[in-house]
Image (cartoon, rainbow, N blue to C red; front, side):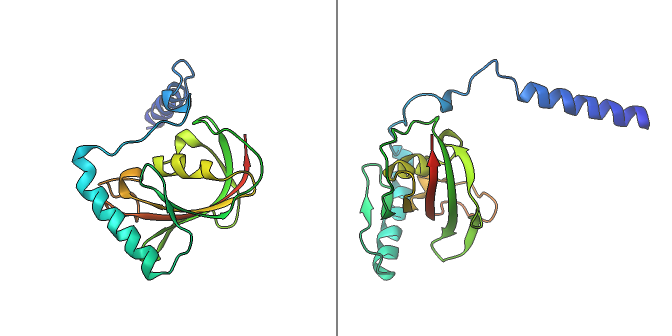
Length: 172
């Protein structure tokens, strides 16, 4: 039994080393932030999401909400300072909270700053975070296509529009 446990442990360790291999760079983490287009197959859900976001903004009297060319709605709460040119390799240090449109919080950094590379995040963040600079704060209302699409993830149901408030502490 001990030999079997050791064998399983060795296989797990070898798997970890293989997964961390730097031989193949992650193509998502190099270059400029891509242009996003909604596929024809996803257009019906995208239109439903856009209608839901517009209704949410109106019902909640959210001021100064804009829609960018991709279809992500955003509200600049504080622009921040600087002139960082974001790429998918940009490291961002943020405090954030993610909610469903019904107000249920599904994720939060709980007032602490966490660091990510933009390429590790959902497309909606790749679109929205570069709208602010260091010290800035943005609210993003993101159609499901730029989040998790038709997949359920944790407590996020399929085709969920997400409402994020993001404070950008640092970027490099």
